[in-house]
Image (cartoon, rainbow, N blue to C red; front, side):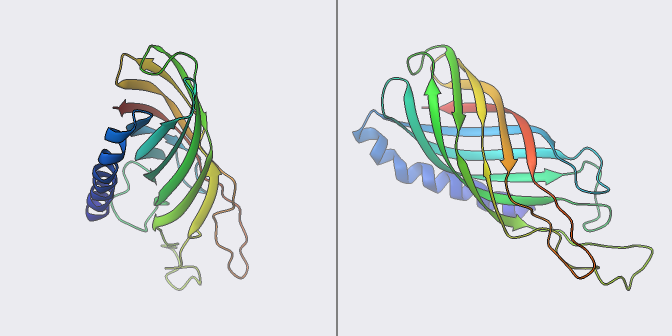
Length: 202
């Protein structure tokens, strides 16, 4: 997970550096870096999983109040205390490609509410496998739990704090069933989460 997290940070850094010349030429652009921590919808047998978000978005202001922000991000679900992978653990993570529409109730860079929502295309970054400790020959053992693609919505509401900071809530609403079908088993799991999120923009 550590090496994967480093690759995510490297990807976000490269994307930000590549977009610097664009923002220098057009003041309508704004860089956004966000990080969030909260809770996620539990999988069967899972107790109160946590959610983690980190990402980058390039915001383009269409008017003083409306903007569109495509971006890239990393989103993970984990249960605190799971130290042995595959045993009592239903952790997973996804790379996200959100395309968000934002409405700024006040002028940009002034205090006030900001709301956002848009589609999110997600690709699995780390899966997890079934494991039945009582039956090492169970047919589901070592099979992936989650599907490789998810599609959802990312709603959010923030309060602008001065020129560069926003603090608020960011959610993910999964619209697809992520649980893989296997013979004799057909479940349904949709990835939903809500995080307290800090956004730095410039």
